[in-house]
Image 1: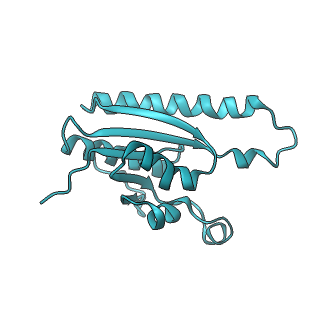
Image 2: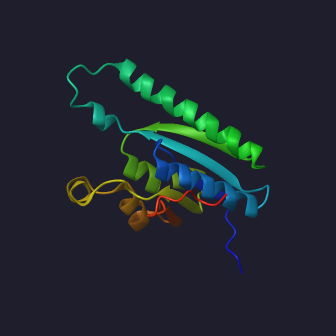
Length: 156
C-alpha cells in the first residue's frame, strides 16, 4: 500500500537541489490527488547578515524579492502541471528549526521533500547541514532529493 501524503513541505533556496526536490514534490502531490497540499518555504537566514558591517534592510528586501520571483515561477510550473493546491511562505530566522520543527507543526506536514546539501565535508563539519538536521529531528517523513552524480537531468 502506498503512503498517502496530504501536506508536503518543500524548502526552496534557489539551489539546483531545491529545484529537483520541488519537481519531485509536484509529482508526489499529483499522485496523492487534489486534496494534497504543496507548501513552498523559503527561509531567510537573518544570522547571515549579522556580521556584515554595512547591513541594512534593503539587503534583506532584495533577498526576499529574489525568493518571491523564484517561488512564483515554481507555482506557475506546478499549476501548469496540474497541481492547484499550492502555497508558499517566507520566514526569517534559523533554517534548521523552521524547516524541521516550526513549519511542519504549524502546517501538519506529513512529508518534507528537501534537496541534499551542497556543502563540502569541512563546511558540514563546521556549520552542520540543514538537510542532515531535518532528517534527524523532523517528526514526519523526510525525502532527501539528490542530484544525479553523472550530471544527467532528472527524468520528467
